[in-house]
Image (cartoon, rainbow, N blue to C red; front, side, top):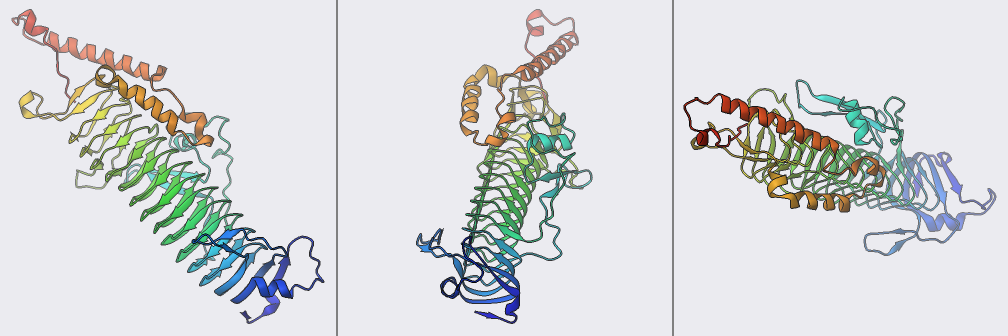
Amino acid sequence: CKCEDWSKVLVITTDGVGSGTDLSAELRGQICTTTFAGWVLLGVNSGNSTSSDDSSGSPLKPGVRRNDLVSNCILEPGCTVQGNTFIDRTHVCPDASIINCGSVTFASDSSFADEMEITIGAESGGGRDVRVHVESTLVDVCHKLGMGSQSTSSSHFHYNHYKPTKLIMNTICRNASILHSPMVTCVYLSPHSSIDAATSVSNVILLPESKIAKSCTVDAAYLQWKATITTNSSVSSTVLMECSEIGPNSFVSSTVLGPDSHLSAGECHHSLLGPNTNSHHQSLLISVLWPLGRGNVGYGANVGSNHTGRLPDQEVCAGEGTFWGLGSVVKMPVNLCDAPFTVVAAGVELSPQRVGLPFSLVLSGTEQDGGGGLNQILPGWVLQSSPYTIARSEAKFANRRKAKRHAWYTGWCIIRPSTIDMCWHAREELVKAGNSSLSSQPSGQNSLERARPTIYKS
């Protein structure tokens, strides 16, 4: 080992080893082929445990070995720091590992903290800025956005009382690991979390059992319990709530991803996605506000098309359980908040509009059907023609609810008083529209023609 000033390298030992004990044998066995600089607290383990593993599965003895440069670090007894190029301003706890990495550093002028600001909704000209912290719930986020009442007492953290904590160095907690990653900057890894073979990771907090893996690029992200970013994904300014996942091959920015949700093989920007929202195929979500989630995005769906040629200053408000069909094109602004569990059929081009008909089927219109090419809507189609969808969705949501810390607000039934109220109001509006259509027909028409059902266009 090498060091310009050994007086700045302090040795700390496990409990039971006195200050006058000869540690030369332990130092030779656990510390070797490493250059030190600055202040370093160097831990020596007096035991013989082998708690860390490399990628091949063979045990690695705790210690600091074959590192090009280690500076200004706290390396506690029992940690494994091996085969790295540069480690700076990092606290490695017992049983934690940094193995075969490039640089693991912490910027001295960093503002890295456990709270950040995310802009969702319109990308410019009126976006909604919301401050989120690492343990935020959707209730907290929606309250900050003015979407509902204040968070209940079930939420452990409230924005009115939360004070962000600024972090001053990397922290790798017990049983956490950073493996085979060329560039890691400003990170906090909770117990049993990991970064494995990531391309670049910066300004990231991982809560227990969360992970970033397989050639991902991540900047400014919070991963809650058991959240995952994997396989060639690029993520920035994003919060992944408990048991959510991004990847493979996803591009996500400025997004709040609700619990038990999954984005893969597509893009999502400036969006709020509620629980159990899934996009498993190549698709696009831009400026989508979907707080109740529980929907699906089909292959090739473009939800949030900026069709005006001006600034991207509009947004899409999606209702609970909305299904965006294959190849559908949704032009902003669109509001489906009062149309839960509506199906937008494959290939539909949904023009700017507001729909308030729950459980509907939205189809493409043509010039020949008398609607001037506007969309055709079948109100209540899901309830009448596909009730199995409701039963299947209830069972699916129950089976996929893995997020225990968010369970108090994600287990509501589909058919509930608020949903029934929306159906009742939609029916009243349809009755009024039907009566108005009949009264406007010429009095000379026969009763059969007047009784012909009205086709409602959006």
